[in-house]
Length: 234
Image (cartoon, rainbow, N blue to C red):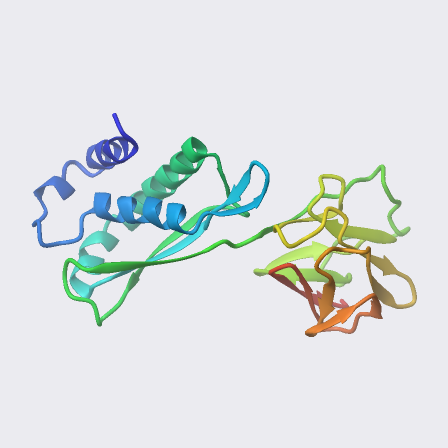
């Protein structure tokens, strides 16, 4: 049984055959699933030996009629589409930069039965403190009043004397992006908060300007690879 057959069978069981009774002129979930796998294959990018990156964030534009019909099952449908996307990536040995996300959107310009897919490879940023690497500042704690980097409404507290950022597994803030070096940059806390590039391949940018070392001010935008983080002084 193929990937799309497994997807359709799982989904059909979960919604009691509702899609099997749909009119042929309407968009069918298996058509969306097939389009998502094609999108991944078409946009697959080899970034290094044995590592092929594909989109992990998808938006499916639907006609008003199809959106109204499918949105009733949006939770189930997007969950199953996400499972199918991850299964396809595993079979093809693709790599995601972050978690998968699928959204059904309404587009009034589309006619019933027509849809389009938009996608992007969106990097995941995760705080991964390594207590053995560098000591915390005495009395510091990762709360909203502390200096931090903010990305996608997620706070990454700067509670250590030195916070290292990069793609490696031994950093404090891990950025899974092919444009980011293993040890890309570090932030030092003192009387001022200083950002220092660690000889990264693609450079570190603050407010659009490449920097080697710079004092961060509240609201500054730090860019590493395709990822942008906002500095908050606390």
